Length: 310
Image 1 (tube, rainbow, N blue to C red):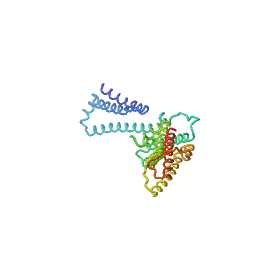
Image 2: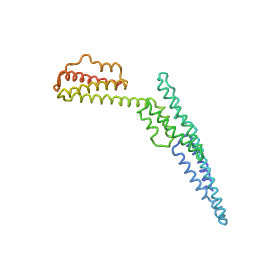
Image 3: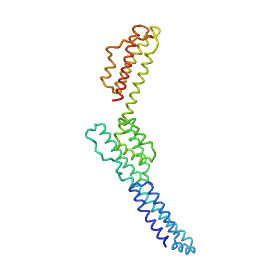
């Protein structure tokens, strides 16, 4: 009789364990509920009262097997129903950490405010799609729900790949880590919103490094141009044209990446150029180009450093 009561108690106990795990998102709650069901069922069917029933049932073995199968099937169907309800509850409820309630400060610029609105819109849409997916499991509408989830992932990727989050790593964090196609990515989008300043800083830092890389490459090309040996007029003419083109390309790159206008003008207009001597100067025009190029290389280095710091 004790085994019968213990088994029945464990079966009943598995229900609150399962529901509590769903509400609190306990990682191993479902496993604990499953173990309670298995142990309780084992104690129940091997208890002395039921063993007497099985012994009496040997006279009508077919009926005993059918009744045992029905009991087991009903218990399995009940457990499956509870699991589906639990997943539906998880899909439709709104976790507190998913939608941070922090208000946008008045000093926040319009770009950040617009980004916050976009992320919240995708969070709300994702919650609705996740609920739709679990509602439509086993129905003809399931493929449509899956297609909508994939479109949501594409839209979220486009949003995270656009400025100001471009190059921040948010896209990879949200869409390429482990988990299913909607639940974990949806949670990680919420985490991006909760730590938006950190992701914006990472995106800004990556963008600056990418911009500065162009200026660094141009300075490297300029140094190589300045150190080139010139032996005749043809080579000097080619050198002069390349110097003028390098100067134009550098100014274009500065304007494209948003270097301050004062720095652009400081680089463009040399005014006084230090009088430097170059042993490999071919003639006076070549010597003049070398002096101007050297001064521009020095200013380009300072402009690059200031732009990176700012």
